[in-house]
Length: 123
Image (tube, rainbow, N blue to C red):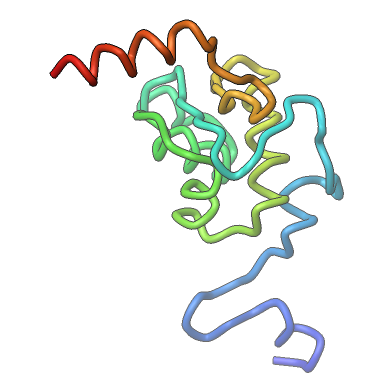
């Protein structure tokens, strides 16, 4: 093997693909505001994922139940920005749905909190 080929091959892992090759050179997708704790879930079944590109199929198989973006990245062993690009592609194609956490600026209604506190005090 030549020195140039060695950069693309690892004895234990086999051929390696650079993350930018997986995403087609794309590095950012801010369309959906995905963050570490955003929950994603796949709509297609595992059988339907068989015809997808390998990285997309891995995500669909993994996300049959809700999972955070951070957990998806850890389980498929790809960098977080790459996973966000792939998830954004799947969301655009309606293969994955997502739910973001409530913004920290949304404060609970004071009347509801007071009612909860009053209920706790009556216990």
